[in-house]
Length: 285
Image 1 (cartoon, rainbow, N blue to C red):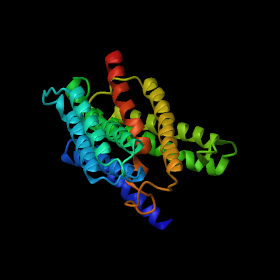
Image 2: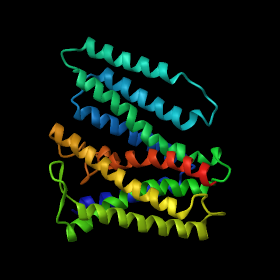
Image 3: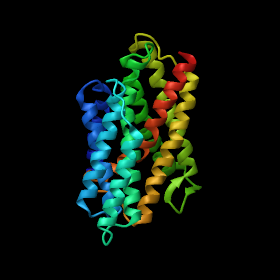
Image 4: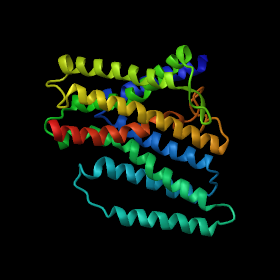
């Protein structure tokens, strides 16, 4: 327990630094590192042993993050469809070349992992760049939105845990995650909602040069949606672990498992924050 608490505190400082240092290379390194490590951990869980396949998947993941994070900002255009097609063909060729050791399931799951996770986490960089896209969005707003992503995932999980321990009676998904309860889920959603709305109200009044151009009620609805989808992310990761008979995706974080064990809910939340922010700013800004 002590090791888990210490790792959690260190992880908290890493997360705090992500929005405080959003406009420094720190965020870029964090996104690249967490994305590539998560893809690597998933491929190990899938049983991939072909080193060339690892190299292809991780290279594609890095290029995807770079394009999504910097392509539009630098005015770059690239035939994404052609690149994806080439990547899929390369992975299938590798599967055929090493068919005795690489299954179609391993190749397919590796491709899915190297698409979805890097894209989802690259949305942190896209959120940071929103002040280039909208004149009404400031750097302070961008930092808050990055915090919003992390807080929605972390506080939903934290409040769900403590509410479930104290009040939990009805199992949420007993076959996937036996400890999760309906009461815990409700507590997680409400707890994150209160924290997010207080943080937004304080930031609008004292921290921002002008309030974020999205109504408080809309951010409240978004907070609820983020809490729900973060739980889906957590349950999806639990399903993968059950399917492959593992407890954790890795052991790089003492007491917590692998990087992917911490990215499961965050990777579901971040794209929703980015796309909904764009829609809401266009609607209300």
